Length: 400
Image (cartoon, rainbow, N blue to C red; front, side):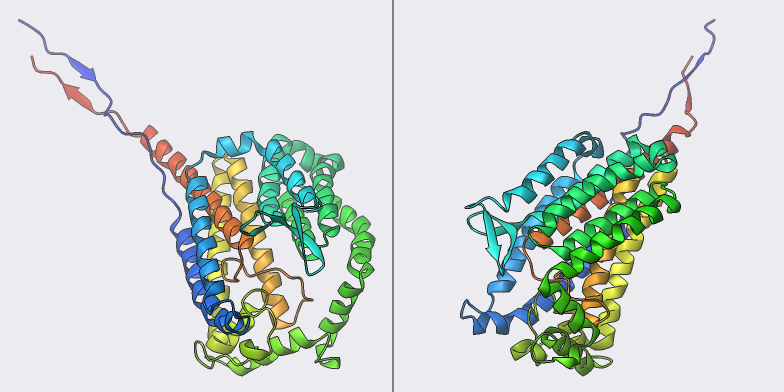
């Protein structure tokens, strides 16, 4: 008689899949959608006055947003291991991009500043890509030198030194706003990477004289600082931008004068579709519109930090630091842009991410969102793989 036997056979399962974070995607879509509406509202009269077609800036914004979404999809489908492997090469690309703006025939001078590379059909602002590259490099460095960053001053000085070199090139363009943003993101990532506050405080104290000199060395920066402190002292010259922005915000009151009904954007408010688009939002949508913008950014940045914390808990440190860096960059840039419009910070020339009209900024912000989405995908993929690993194999009884 044949005996019965049992064999243990593991169930066949497909490879674990991840998913993209809903909070990141929904908040980014919300900001981009609001941006489309407000760029249309704020730019039509400007383009019409310039006789370049009423929908010129809106069409341009849609085009760059579409390109940015395409790049975001590409980076969201790229393994983080590939990005980390090429972190140093990307850093070299960042230096090359910042140097190219000084090459005659390649670099473009606009309003006295060399910040753009001439691509023929359009200009590309190098620093927008450099911001993201620096975040990737710092994430890679913090993974490789975690102990040195935590224990030794030299471990902190090395990444700061790289950032200072990039800042030096930015100040030569000049671009003080982006230089300040790079330093803030670098310090934030190093601190989150475990650096001691004592070391950061000492380096900050040593750097303060240099930063003060950089802020006050140029006459136009000094004038911006004076006009910020009292814009009403010279409301028709140095304080014109800020006073008009404050007038727009005041007209909006609680719920605004209505979409498209802004008066300030027609004749008074400079850069209404770029640097001061929040003032138009405040005038047309009121305090409720400002709260909407703040809420969407809080949702996006909060989702990014939550993803970063979960990645660190699972030991995915490169992914976690990338999420932290992108969240810091978006938070700082949004806060500075909002602060400038509200009159609590001097004019810096930084756009409101995903909302302001722009080419390079819109595209690279989309790429940053794509990288953050990739972090969330690989995180959930790892969590699903861990969940599958603890499933008990199913025993199947073979017939006698």
